[in-house]
Image (cartoon, rainbow, N blue to C red; front, side, top):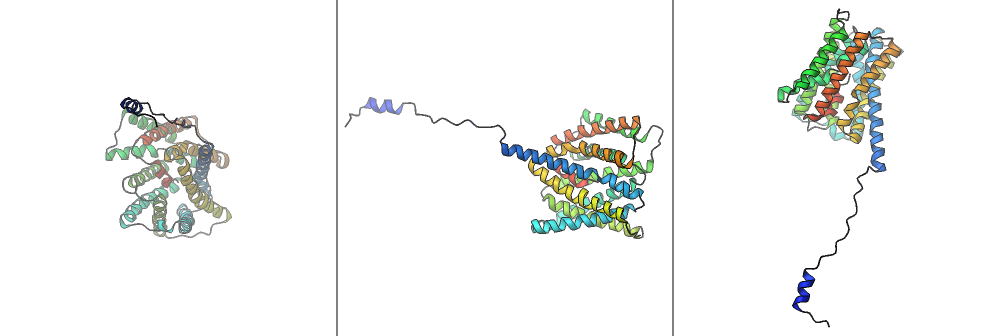
Length: 333
C-alpha cells in the first residue's frame, strides 16, 4: 500500500484536470437547410407568379364586358369555399375565433372589401399595369399610418414620399391624360388596404394567420355581396372565358397563391419573403404588356421606376419596424 503524505494530497488537489476537447461547431449551412431555403424561395416565387396574374386577368374579364362587382363576388365565393374546406380538413380549431377577433377581422374585412371594389372598378378606367403601379404605394402608406402609433419618421421617409408623389405625377402624365377617376379609385384602394394592414398589426397579431385570413375573406365576401345587391344584383351568365377568369382569380390568385405564400414564410420567414414584392409587380406589367397589349410612355416608365424605388425603401424600413410583413398577404388584389 503506498504511503500517503500531506504533500501527496496537496499536489494531487492542485493538479490541472484533464480537459475533454470540445468538438468544433459546424456553422456552415447543412444540405437539409439549403434544400429548405431553395424550397422556400421556389414557393415564394410561385406565390408571386400566382398573385401577379390577378390584375391582368381581372382587366381582361372587365374589358370583355363582365361586371366588376359580380366578378369579385364569384371570385370570393370560390376562394372562401376552398379556405373553409382546407381549414376543416387540416385543423378545425382554426375555424373558431373569439368576439374580439371577430370584431377586428370584420373591420379589416370591411376595409379590404371596399378597397377591392375600388380597385376592380379602377380597372374599368385604367390599365392593369398602371393600377398595379399605384398599388405599389402601399408600403409607403402603411409607414405613414404606423406613425400615428409612434413609429418614428425620418428624413428618408420624406425622400420616399417625394419619390412616390413624383412617380404618381409622371405615371398620370403632366397633361392629365390618364383617367383621374380611375386613379382616385386606385389611391383610395391603397389607403383602405393600408388601413386594413395596420388594424391587423395593432389588434390581431396574437391570432393564427389562417384564422385571420379566413374570417377577413368571409367579411370581404359579405361586403362585396352587399354592394352587388345595392347595385341591383344584376346577373349576367358568364361565358367560358369569364368562368376561366373567375377560376383563375379565385383558385390561383387567391387560394393557391396564399397557400404557397404561407409555406414560403414557414421556410424563409416573412422578412425574406416580402422582398419578392417588386418581382410580382414586374410580372404583372409583363403579363399586361404581352397579353393585353398595354404600353407605357417614357415618362410613365420613369414614374414607375420612382414608385418601385420608393416601395423598396419603405419595405426596408418596415423590416426594421415593429411590423410583420407576413400580413401583407392579406391585401393582394
